[in-house]
Length: 319
Ligand code: XMP
Image 1: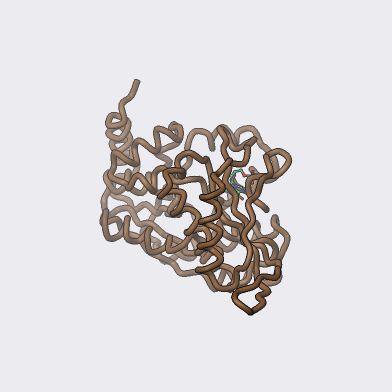
Image 2: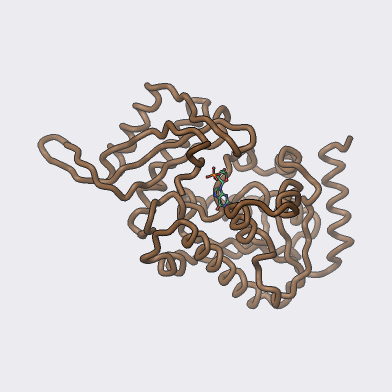
């Protein structure tokens, strides 16, 4: 069987052969797959790689800065950060249907990426973080949600007139191999071992209409939950964990004052394949500590609840 180093060497040789002296564009999302492609292509072709990082404003707490720190500053990869937050917020204003929100986010993402490709006519290749399970998944057309995931992440959803040739160095690899390659190429373990994060990001973790003022409280709550999980050594024991913003006001008291503020739901699940999942039996003291921190540190939140629904019938995400 292939060692990690051998896979890397083989892919580097293949990519060099494939693209020659051409420039390659890559949509870097901060997720595991596109990050590993970035690190691999950087090794293979250096500055011929140009990453486009679209900051949708719907990413995790300080994620945009982290991506730039890891790739641009630390690894020396060429990354163009596009701050498209206002564009996404404007497009989402007044929309509350989850599938409609997914469509809009996918569409705006393509628009931003297409504009970046137009600015970089020198690029003739598009790199993608397609991995083997994606290849199988798109072969057997699946549920509506799977299709949406595909249209967001695969070139099938990108306009054909972009006229870019595809380079997909992870196409034959499974997730665990991709992770090992990432570590070997010097990506931080925290990034490589990260829980999955949906393409539409916090757009589907703010229930209903996405308003700009909901984003920061959600990012902060999620960050508190995730960092406490890490600190307690629980992060790698659960398969996925996150916070959800419920635009519902409930009554609370602080001192003598009555507060009427929003609700944060915490979700943590254990699963093998994400098709079925059970809620994680997190320690009550731990949950108590996280809930207190969220309520004390985040203005606008006065109540925290823990989701005890299994999948099925509940999905992992709330939308
Ligand atoms: P559900 O909510 O369907 O989630 O139980 C199963 C897994 O898929 C992720 N997920 C998404 N990923 N685009 C994505 O890229 C999406 O629209 C999407 N919806 C759900 C979810 O985070 C979980 O890991």
